[in-house]
Image (cartoon, rainbow over all chains, first blue to last red; front, side, top):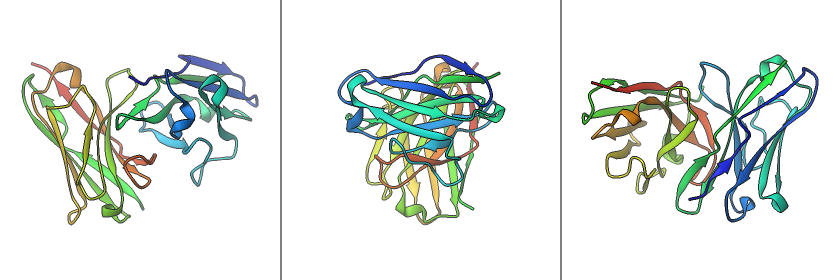
Length: 111
Length: 120
């Protein structure tokens, strides 16, 4: 079964840049789009990146997404970190067996 | 305002059934695929089920296949997940999610979720 692997946690200081990775277990991660969702404590997830690198309206351009085929991974980069960015982040992609797959989530701490 | 609102959660005994529904508003419901995603306490997100815009095709995670069914009413703008033979591991917050288009398109709008607790 296709799986997405994320680091359990990352931390960085306000104003800095952080990158969260999402690695596909098999096949090519570039075969299907990757999405990123932010979930603040006690709240429902919201979309921060869709179709690899697209930002929904209202998401600041401090958030960016990319794909690296050589490492079969996707990345979410957040620049100019703010304390409000502290949240869990999940990557997601569509599997060839007609199911959606989420990564295990990465807890971002801004300290 | 585009929104989806879940209802129907609660406490149910193992082996029991529960029906979750999601009321959609602010968009043309019949044009979009919909899904359910759940989150067990302290755990990550798990996709549960999805349905095409017409309701003609449904998809399920292996963990719920054969126990859950998904349907939609495009006249009432409602999505419903029928959950049978519930197990303790089905305990989770269940989120209704709107797709951006077809079943393979990304999710864009999430509901606030409804809690399902399976316990004796």
